[in-house]
Figure 1: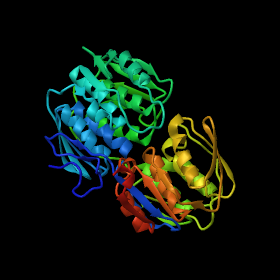
Figure 2: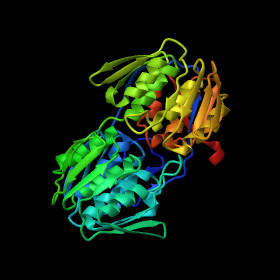
Figure 3: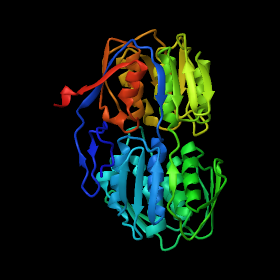
Figure 4: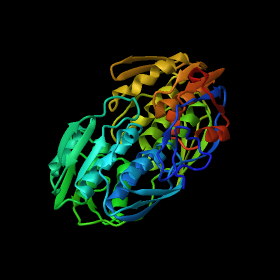
Amino acid sequence: MTVAREGSRHPTLRRVVGRQATYHAQVEQFEVVGGARLAGEAAVSGAKNSVLKVMAASLLATGTTRLSNVPDIGDVPIMAEVLHGLGARVEGHAPDITITVPGELGFEADYDHVRRIRGSVCVLGPLIARAGRARVALPGGDAIGSRALDLHVMGLERLGAVFDNTHGYLVAEAAQLSGAQIWLDFPSVGATENIMMAAVLAKGTTTIDNAAREPEIVDLCNMLVAMGAQIGGIGTSTLEIQGVDELRPVEHHVVGDRIVAGTWAFAATMTQGDIRVRGSSHEHLEIALDKLVQAGAEVTTYDDGFAVSCDMRPRAVDVVTLPYPGFPTDLQPMAIAMNSVADGVAFVTENIFEGRFMFIDELVRLAADVRTDGHHAIVRGRERLSGAPVRATDIRAGAALVLAGVVADGVTTIADAFHVDRGYQSFVETLTQLGASIRRVPDDTLL
């Protein structure tokens, strides 16, 4: 039974349950002919930043958990391999998969799988809670800067785990986890998730102060509560968790992907287009949508999403990335891309990941006028960009470069298309339906 949908665009991985995954060299790039105005409807699937975590949460209960609204993206079958290596069985394909977890789990998540997606480190908490030990390879993922695991380790140590770092692996043991008072120096999403997933099976009460508040955290909390966990303060910066003896498998619908939804919102504004987005709540993007209104766009909200239209060259808007509910760091590349064709000068400040500005060198190849100074970028808008060969450095940078290519004169090629496939379902197909001239072509430089 394949995990990836038949014919899906995931050339990096084809997984068959029970077999070893094969990782292929990526030889595709996007070719974009500029000058399109994007209009139409874009459907948003489940969130990449949630589905990997709820897949990991399934390890907390023996039996079969069913997930719906699973996105057809490259990271899902890789995460399925991580779970398979721990003894779980993953079946089905997007948008519906099942995860069957045995009574006795393995405890090692090896480097071959974990190196591909950083999100796989979220198995650490569930393994310590269920198996009493874990051996998890230090993760890979996007090249967007340092994302140390110090807060993960600190919180799990407060619960009673003992850690060692040896030969590229985090090794943890815990005879018994006990509730604790935990303060996070920074509202880390990953640390909040790992600590929470361990605490739900710990003895006593755990309080996490300065916890992350992202919608994906709320989604994970809702799944854990359905499994029988006792969690108070959901959606706030203080989570109170009363440990229980065991959890049960559930059916869970993954929350819509607000970052994909935000990408299409910026696409509508920067191409002076009109896009109706379905499948993601506008409430999860309040600040980002407000920035687009400041830029001159009109935003209309609906029960199942929102619409963004813009009939003028956007105005430059300043952006400062912050933890939720602040402006998402994952949408910062789109904000810079939009400001590169806006009227005026914008200041963009990146407070989350220092490596987010790596893609600016590629954007400058498209004739964007962007200067950086530490974690600040000054963007002077031009009426048009100019097509050129560029390279995606991460998921969101790749998507932003494609949008920049849509508003550039001539042809733009974006190498390393696999990055975008890790986070966007049917990316080329959606853009084509919206009116873009885009296709996948072989990357001859790698042949």
